[in-house]
Amino acid sequence: MPDSVNEAESSEAFKTGPLKLGIAGLGTVGVGVLDMLTKNGDLLTRQAGRAIEVTAVSARSRKSDRGGHDVSVYEWFDDPVEMAKSDNVDTFVELIGGEDGPAKAAVEAALKAGKHVVTANKALLAHHGASLAKLAEENNVCLNFEAAVAGGIPIVKTMRESLAGNGIKKVFGIVNGTCNYILTKMENEGRDFRDVLEEAQELGYAEADPSFDIGGIDAAHKVACLTSLAFGTQTNFDSIFIEGIEHITLDDIKNASTLGYKIKLLGVSVETPDGIEQRVHPTLVPKNSPIASVDGVFNAVGLTGVFVDELLLTGRGAGAHPTASSVVGDIADIARGKHVPVFGIPASHLKEYKRAPMRAHEGGYYVAMDLYDKPGSVAFIAKAFCEAGISIESIEQKAPVNKGVEKPTAPFILTTHDTMENSMRAVLKEIANADYCAGDPRMIRMERY
Ligand SMILES: NC(=O)c1ccc[n+]([C@@H]2O[C@H](COP(=O)([O-])OP(=O)(O)OC[C@H]3O[C@@H](n4cnc5c(N)ncnc54)[C@H](OP(=O)(O)O)[C@@H]3O)[C@@H](O)[C@H]2O)c1
Image (cartoon, rainbow, N blue to C red; front, side, top):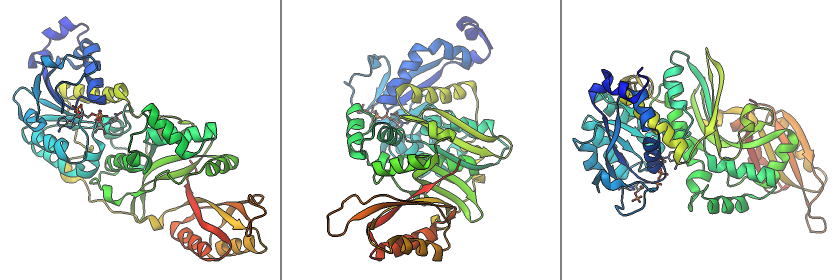
């Protein structure tokens, strides 16, 4: 490895000429990438063994400020598809976003034109990962997507390369910073969901339309990618069980804390005898587990490998510079001539995804309900769980909160030992239909890391 830019310039590797980048999308991440290439270009040249140059850019507005960068020095394309095909570009960097539309059209055009692609687009990969991997392979080019899963955390490369030959049994993570920020604030400051969401929007941690984040869709996009990397299967977004954090109350967070747990939005992909379970949902995790300490906007991805055993990577899951760090790492690999199959094994060898039904999921459950303060209520609940074959781990009945009204209620919390989701859904339906509980009982899944 040469130890100066001049030496790098005279090395064999450098004689292959500069890597010519076309960057489509000059928003948060695009500008972050320009920052990094500008600030650390020399370091990157030395590490990659050749210069990396931006030759072309594309965005919607030609006039917008791009973080102070003078983008007029690059060839401008209104249409990213045209840029993808340009002779002036040999690596296409897609930072537009969206599962279809211009991002998909341009990535496909680039791959077909024999250009390497680097993307941060999880929605695109989650929905079209298998077909894009095939297209990349047919054209003998790279499709690198480190930034698409957990921003700055190098989990894709870790799973795809460092853990080759391990055999992964389970991968899980906190992969949405907005949800983790909201849940952490609720817990630390005793504020309710809507209040914290509004603040997150004001601070720019949540979108004006936060539904993709708080509804679990964004996390599910990342789970789809992690599943393919872990199990060598074709991406299958539509089979993911998704539940967001909108229904989590401050009382749930306080109850979980009393029981020794925190509530996190987890994405999980796990191999079961029935197939692969992919799920995103709020989860009670023990306070003393490593994942419970991942707070605020931070992300974490953990996994169990047959040889490596337990692993947990934490870091910033979003933001201009952490995300740019992953994009630039992918670009450096291409500059070095490194070519790894998109999901770690050739696209033609990716297995068809077999879904394990969520109803067959086994785990512990937290249940909260408002029981009418009358004789027989608790006995009814205990009997219903007993008849469903569900073993109760803990029970707590609190004092009535609304004495003086016609039918006062008391909060009633229980947790279960591991049981089948099917049994839980059945027993909660039975309770909801009986006259012992105001409103429907609610359950949150538990993991005992
Ligand atoms: N933001 C993060 O922290 C983060 C983290 C991880 C991954 N990602 C992923 O990175 C990608 C980019 O995210 P971002 O936050 O940087 O988005 P963003 O700030 O909204 O930027 C999107 C960029 O795409 C450009 N664009 C939109 N339509 C276009 C078109 N038809 N042709 C050319 N350019 C077009 C926009 O142009 P104008 O500026 O002219 O409107 C803008 O520059 C997404 O896939 C996202 O999921 C983001």
